[in-house]
Length: 147
Length: 120
Image: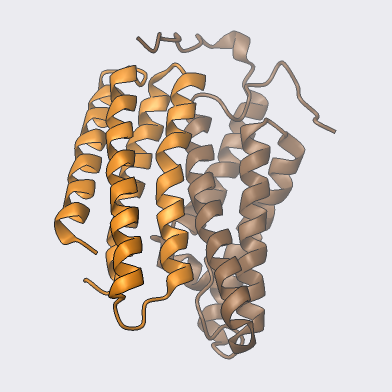
């Protein structure tokens, strides 16, 4: 189910590299944090810490999907992040009880410079753009030698 | 943590980031010399990790969270190699953008390392 379409620009090339790179960094940060929280102090705030780990895993899958041009998987995972950051961001402001500690999505990603809030929208935009522009219509960027 | 060593890491990262930013402006892909620059940063990171390991074993700061600290050490070490791999795969200016972001990330992680160690 790789659903690759050769008429579409691959999601992991050109500007998509930056998106994949930032996704990768966030995936690393969120997963590492989640693993650390769950393994050391799960009983303090189970909901927040399990959510933290789950969000990290979603970022890992999204990074993989964007890097390898798996468009459907990318749509689903980036979509989950969009919903996640909006819902958890709102809940964390309203109900402090369930989220006593920070996750990547708390306060709309405040702890990460609001990158978790901006990134999914950039991701959705990039998926939409690469999905509709055919590469034959635009001049490809010239490849340079490493030298 | 040895503060001069941390400052050296940040300084090298800022220089590498500036070099990459210049390449972004000039619409150029990463060149091999920049990857050697990244290798210099990595070697300083290795030295720093050894120093931190010795300090942690002999005279650890009060309340140091070992798992958190070493997690950051490992994370910091893998960022630039990934950017280097991209430099080979993406031969456009976007590899320079990725190197720029990677270098700034390593510098930021250095700051977090100092925080976790309790220096700042």
